[in-house]
Image 1 (cartoon, one colour):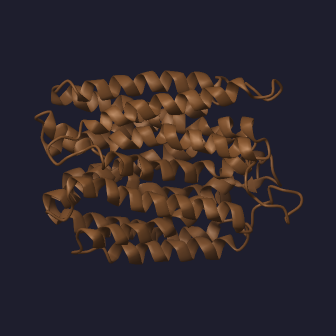
Image 2 (cartoon, one colour; image 1 turned 30 degrees about the vertical axis):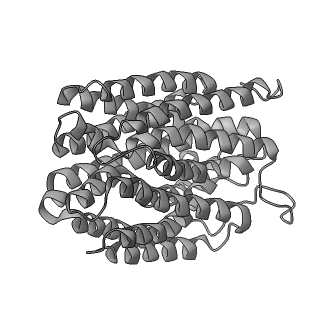
Amino acid sequence: MSEHAYVHDAVGPDIPLSEAAAALALGVVALLFAGVLPSLLGALGDEHRLSASGFGLTATFEGLTMGLTTAAAGIVLPPRHLKLIGAGAALALAAIDFSAFHVAGPFIMANRAAAGVAEGILLWLTTSMIARTATPERWAGVYFTALCTAQMVAAFLFAQWILPDFGADGGFAALAIAAVAGIPVAYFLPKLFAPLLKDESLSGAPPPRGWFALFATLIYIGATATVGVYLQPLAQEAGLSADVARTAVWVSLAAQIAGGAASTVLAGHVRWLAIFVGCTLAFLVNWGVFLLHPQAWVFIAANALGGFVGILVAAFIVPMTIEVDPSRRTAVLGGSTQVLAGALGPFAASFVVADDNVHGAILLGTVSLFAGLALIAGLHITAPKASAR
């Protein structure tokens, strides 16, 4: 096999590209739901199966169990028997998605909480592979590009065919089919990953500065999720239709593909703090447009800008956590922290929105965005000179 058919690792031996691709593909299955979540929640609302506050709570429960599962796996699970773990998690996720048919209210929330456990295990496989590579921000960019491509296709199909013809249950069926497809992919996973610590008896938990970096990530990424989950209500309050919101979802995902590609090009060439500052300004523009009752194309374009910078900043969380903790234990937990942020942001927003007014989510998101950026900048300023970049 040629040199280019391997992924170069900073921790352990290089792994074949086919094994790395399998780990990335299962991560796509794990987070496919996130790309269609606004449309799926909107369909559940249209069918009177969820209230506006239920939107946030449903996203919270799924993201919370997913993030906690990924984090727990990163700390306590030895990275072995990966093929069996991947296949089992994909099978469980498919069964849970199929069981969502015809349920509503608290039962939807419980179903998605269960789905988050299976999704969390799949995401752990992906983040474990990325954190071990020699250029993790580049492989994070590759992953996000693949993820956003799949999410864009799914969101387009949801908007144009699945939800109009089959409703929310059709959406759950589509997610289940994607999970079933992940079962044979697990066969191509490596048998094991190299340990991150020479002494495997040591805890896999990050050092104190690593935990602080994860907390800062939680605040910053949570701010973006606070607004994103209410995309359809925001469009409707601006006098736009649900179709505009659904179009905005898949167009944003197309922009996220560009954001993922940009992260692979910029990896190693741009300071991560500059990326965070630039993306923060872009988010403020995006949300400001939402408050202005824009025309449909302006609303869609603003959401596309948010999608582009959302993926760009997510990829650069990896080098930020490695600067804070060179052992990469914190980096392994970065993905789960972003998922937790996607859960806690909507949960916090559920307390500041009403069925006829969700603008409180934008105010909360703005405050959280600045708070998270301040914490992240503080980490960089106080970093040892040899590791700061």
